[in-house]
Image (cartoon, rainbow, N blue to C red; front, top):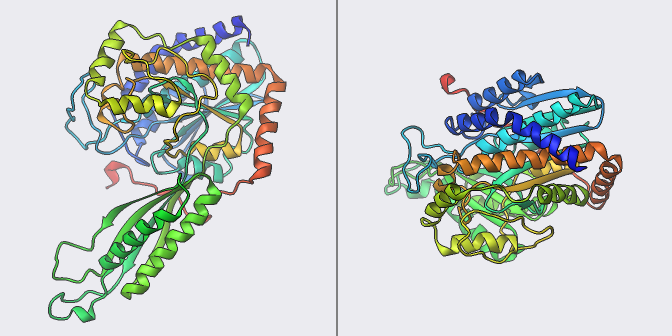
Length: 477
């Protein structure tokens, strides 16, 4: 992208920044967890209509998903947005102490209020760039709910919603600014429901078959399994139903939910089978039955070197996020609530040396920097298997702020967050302009993608009979 083109697309971002900063603030103020984002998706749909997009609501049978499309012809460039919140992370904005707000306890502790707003801002700037220059090309914004454990993008990929897309671009709020290194864990969420037989726990214990015993034995078995899995695999569980509150009744039903993660989808499927075997063994030991229900699943991220190099060039052309002294002062107050280990962890995971007295990231992580693997999961992974995909991580909060924390919620409406939001939109829109203007670059991105698929073909990690776990509108409860 020439300097003139870079400045033109950045100016188009700046021209609309105020409306999208306001959108981010509105989404922050209406936190909704996975598959309940009815108001948040409606806000995005209204913005899409205001900008002149053709809008499709409820794609893939998900009522809180939305797609906007503009332009015509090829290539088709997709921008991925999110807007779901998390439970237990309610927090007053703009202060450096934990102070939950009244209400349901939900909060944007991962910055998805910014994520969707910046992605839609980038898409709109690119749409306007196409129109002003009378260029062929289609821009598509995917409003994706339920990234936090709900795997909405994986359902959307499975339903073919990305089949005609040439490239996908997204970002995530972060402590340090860099091109994402395309490392994530494939992840399956599975419910294990054990069914036994109730009985008087004192007078007739021999007649009972304890579902709770089965859950506990399964947990013990999986704990032993952890010693014999690849080092980068992860297995977690949460008790969903302990069988009741009466200890003198043998529990006839109990449920535990597992998250099984592995470095790629192939390893995850193998590990799923081993965890399921442990559950069946627990059922055999206790004389109970077990029902196995896969709720959702996501794949690991697939890298794309040509697109990553292109996005890195855009970050370097932009320079660091333009934080000011007030931004740094608030970030320093947030850092005072963190441990030194929290702060060191951000540098360690990104493979860069610590910079003392730097509360906000004032640099760009060099391309290819490799840190200690501290990897989570994302449903962007499934999009990356369907289409060449690139993701930025852009500084929006104090270095060291843990993901899924009240500190990130507290910073979600701060001026620094808005600067990061606009910066991310510029980086994404600039990457799209590069892909549009250089057919050879897009061809290289597609060839890179196909070469990776040839080594390990993709199959959806979600079984064909599993439907999105749709939740009712709050007034339908």
